Image (cartoon, rainbow, N blue to C red; front, side):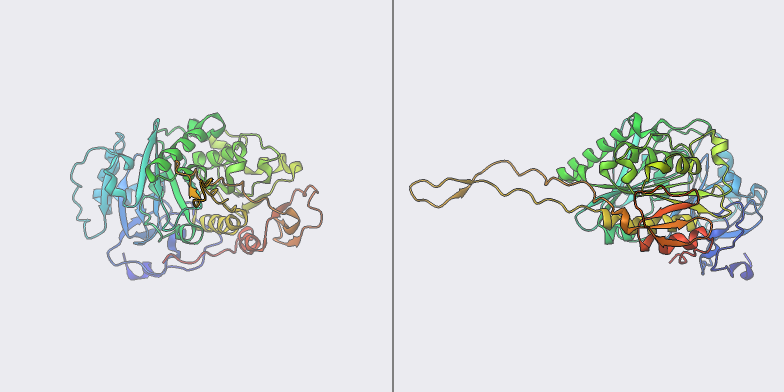
Length: 451
């Protein structure tokens, strides 16, 4: 790639191209000279630090060495340019049509134009455990769950529920404990990271994975997995820790939204980003859970998916419940996830988790044995004390919030917490959220460049 192509912009274009993964990541200020250059369907050339694998849905890749693993659909790539310039990846693409997943692990030092050596079709979670250093795994039915612990004793769990088709773990599988894109959650809030892979291979845009319907049993699957991990960790209280959730995409966002409605007593805060199957009915309890709804102003995925319950109608339908929900409409935004969306989601969760995190009750002291003949009291020898009971998340004080106007970006102090907000208004829980919400809905939010 010519040097001129390496001069990337630090600011986001106000009129983004079709593929964000192949354009918005131009925020990165420096690229390695050993990067792999791919051309997007929009004609733009983008450099990647490495290409991890080729799957039936697309490639997985890293922009920078310590960055997240991104999933890039084949339709976002210029396949003619791929065939011409990156033959190894193109031939892997041809093999994926038969359902194979090809491990590539390529950078341009390895891009000689030769085909990669034949490998057996695999899914990420079927690899040896050491392939995912720092991650524990368990299987409940057909669902694989992966857990990464924080460096300190965990106070909660952050569920990363991503992807249209339930292959969530591939987006975080390269994350190292305590560093990288989710490090703030592990280091500041002592959260364990939990992700999953459904392994269903469902590619029908109109057929939603059953896992998305938390109200029909998949939430119990997640709780079972937490129980398995608690046993492995020898920490019985781990299974009962409070949960924060980040859901993105068709299956990912649907599971998170539906989970919040079914188990509001377990949820610290949640983000649902550009989903379309928000089907579970909210309750008075679930309406109190702080939830950020991210959606594109011109998004049309819900039409493709044949879903009626995307963010826009849901926010209108349940406004009378005065929920602690925040409307985050991306101006001129469409269906794609992108770094701006991800940054907003993280900042929202980082702002809400400490305000909702309950204080654990201490374990009860052992009962002393009554002394005999003036002998000193002795502690009763018994089984280890059960884990301390964890209270529910701290309820938000709505009167301390603000009201935001999604058209103008104006944020004013709430005057009547019990009043229903107008059609252009939304609840803003605190100043930290307002700080990122306002520039986001005005199209001015600029996340920091990847390290």
